[in-house]
Image (cartoon, rainbow, N blue to C red; front, side, top):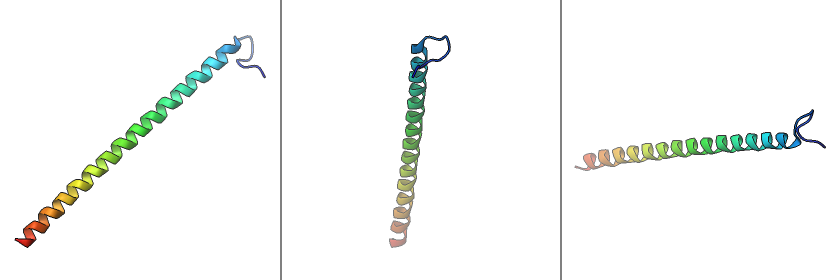
Length: 62
């Protein structure tokens, strides 16, 4: 089966596929980074909530 089709250079189709794959990889990496950032934010929020609970508990003990 020919790649590129028409009167184009067959390797042109392969180059376009490589570009598309590269763009897909970039998008996946960006999504992973966003997910990691969200997870970090959630962890920070949980730590802050735990700190508040500990502080309130200490006040109640006193």
